[in-house]
Image (cartoon, rainbow, N blue to C red):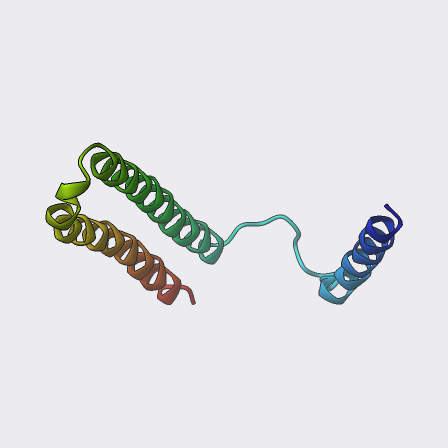
Length: 109
């Protein structure tokens, strides 16, 4: 418990102390979103949703394949190639989401 308290207090000290480095000048307007902010948020959502969809799809594919192999172990060889192909296609959609987010980041000024 003591290690946790030391770790947490040192982390809090460093995290709070370092925020003064990023303090804005007095003339800067606070809490104002620019076009770059919205593009960055859109890029984050694009990749986040792609990763979430890809991982849920891969999880369901793996669960179905393992269930099929558990029911019929002799069919494991026939199921392997379509299984790997399906995972590759699911992963390609995640890569497309990543490319879209990188393209959105490139539009930032």
